[in-house]
Image (tube, rainbow, N blue to C red; front, top):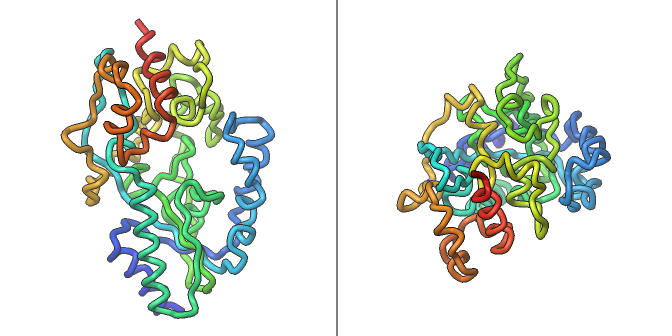
Length: 308
């Protein structure tokens, strides 16, 4: 099994993934925390988190033949700084390039096809973000990194600027050791969050999170008490990552599609406000920024512009 395991990892690196770890298809021990999180309504309006709870809690309900979970990481860091000017909008670093869902899925499809060539009996299931799988816990169990106090997956070699994907397959392999937690006594992310969405280490109340409010909280006004604390963010938020000491180990991505085109890292709030729907769709084509839709995106812009 060692030989095929080594070959599988080699293939993943050839395809372009930066980190690869493999876990047995045994549910991570921390997965029971999901139930408590849902009971506290920390998921807000993200009802799909509760609807697909059983699949998240048992990977065999997602892929009954599961024997191994191949976890991959793809570095997306680009070396730029967000503007501090009040007339500029901030967009999370992950969304300044092309939509990673499409890039990662295509790479994982290639990965699976190559594994089938390696062993004709291999079958698998591809997962990227939207699949009902607790990918940060699986990545931790597969040794990629650990789920930090800001609830992001943190790696020792790329920090937290890393996209995750999974390939669940029907073959047993040699497994990596789970990654231990290296957050230590650090509280930087909790102290930096302007909305206090990190209510305690490792626990995020999404209802107060700027990323949730600007991306997943649809068709409602942003609560006034939180609107005042958005600090210019109109899509996502990088504050808890920007302050994380482990991100001093960030490395520039090798994936050109993650790099902002034409220095598109700074957006004028007044110009965004003037966008009609076709212009919005054109401007952010191929980008995750289309996720909330035109109406909600302009709501975010209005919320940030209100702040004096």
